[in-house]
Image 1 (cartoon, rainbow, N blue to C red):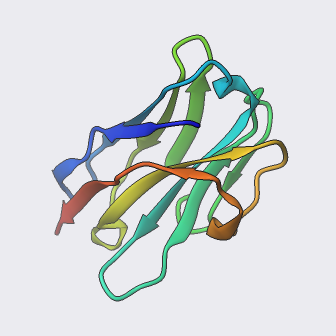
Image 2: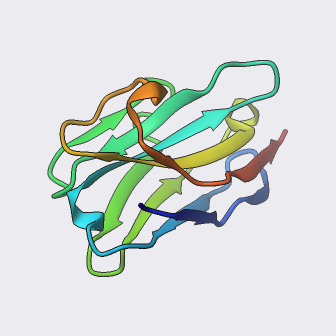
Length: 124
C-alpha cells in the first residue's frame, strides 16, 4: 500500500510558477512509476507528466511540454512537478498517482494509488 500526499497548489497569476510535491509512504517508492494528472471542471482527468522509477524516462502532455518538469527523489520518497509559464487553461485539480512497475502510461486506469489532489488556479 502506498499513500500519496500532494502539496504546493495555490493561486498564481498567468506567467507565474508553482512547484507541486507528492510525498509517498512506504519503502518501495523507487519501484513505482509516478505521474501527475489534472482535472478541470467538466473535463476528464488527463495525464500531465510521468516519470519512470529511475527518473531516466519522462513523458509530457503536448500542452505542457517546455513549461512543466517532472522529477523525483527516491531517497526522499517524493515526486515533483515544476510548473512555469502558467496559463489560465492550466487551472485544475492536480493529482499525484503511482503505478507499480514500468513503463509510464497515459491511462489513469493503469495507476494503482492516488493522492487527494491539490487545486491550482491561474488568473489572467
